Length: 311
Image (cartoon, rainbow, N blue to C red; front, side, top):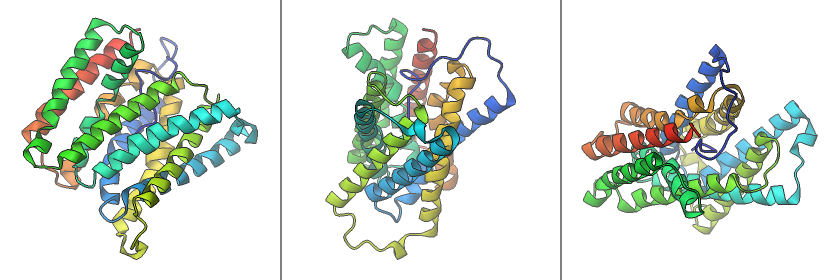
């Protein structure tokens, strides 16, 4: 999963900024990399425990990103006040432990493509959070939310019919709400000035939280690393280096180099990529609830993002 949402975060790039080949390359990376993380998670949990593997992923990614920040900007860039660290920890627990962790747990029983489509509802939940705290989004935005909620209802069909575990579907919905809460909180709380530093601290906090939850769930009992498949190891390495480090770096750079209206298109491209990869590589079924509900959600997110980016 990604580390922010375009509805609430990221400075708008200056108008008329030239869209270079580097921008298109970085955008393609965000499209494919973040869209492929759902596939990677599904392969990891085939043989690895969900929370322990997710915790290991983000602790490793956080340490790598910390090293990159110290190398690129100097050790001083890692400095943060106590309030900033506490805020980063809270946001990390909401995003990484709650948002991502529950998706990882859910993908032990839910297809990766379906999980991605359910997570695509994040901009909708952010709008509802803003509305609940006194903001007044445009009518078109609220209309998009209502349409998206209808799409979510359709997407729960496989859970209601028993095609997949309903508990897994509901876990992803809760994960999307927690991710939205984390994204919304990140826009209100004091965080480190360097976005890479803030992300590194969030990854470390969420990763440690994942390990703690995994231990509390007893995932370490009978754990045999020798039984982990090569595919799971490769997928975990991909999630650490490409999904977390490269994906976020490309996104953070895009926020400075490209119009937010262009960058935010990842919100409705990622789930399409995830569904396609799941069907092609894991032979996940493209049932009518997934196609119809997913289409409705993606269209609704497109309406919300296109309306919000004009503000």
